[in-house]
Length: 335
Image (cartoon, rainbow, N blue to C red; front, side, top):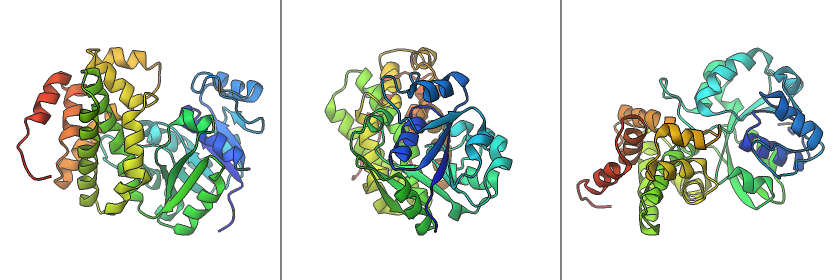
């Protein structure tokens, strides 16, 4: 298929802005849509986004707008960089303005509450696009590290391999190395579940537990994700790659991870409301995804004890220490 030259990025949070910078550095013509005028003005006048990526210099050729129609006009690809639980309502507002043949790319990592749909499924349902037009990006992609040019890799997943390659070519730089995959289900589940496991790792750190506990949660979290993936038809090897283990390790171990930091505050005894206030508007996707992932697993008969525990802490008033006791008290069995 033809190269993707003009790209709209809808969502100017930390990851949307960082990915827009990657695309611009890769030589694409990029327009970034921001909900707030002051964010668009900062990008255009100061080449920065101080609210989400303070002290990061953005390319002078990256443009921003508050008008979605301006960003979408003539776009070869549209990147959705809004939180997973707001994707549907935003898509409904943008649907009529989306260029007909454009490749649709999801950066959102989550499972929608209520419908229990993955983000690519939400895009297909709302826009009417065929699944072969939808690609997802998933991997160990902490936004700030990418924005300052630190090396990383990611996965571009699409059922249409040629389209995945086109997105890959559009975002390859000296510091950002994309791989392709056709297992959209596995890549999306890896990205959604890792946020929940990272919350659990943060809770453990807040309780004062060390690296053995962290390694245990990461490993058992990977097993939990793989079980759910198998039940939904994902490919097992996807979870051993960048969109599985790679993303899981980065999100669970880094202080830059919103989900890890959010969980740590809960582990130290803060309420959900206090932790949300401390996040200053940044979304910890795992807080809501734990509920939808738990429901999705129940629908398919997959055990997800860590996601279940995180849900109880976030939404049923269970204390983090009670969650730890319950996880440790589970029946012994072969690995």
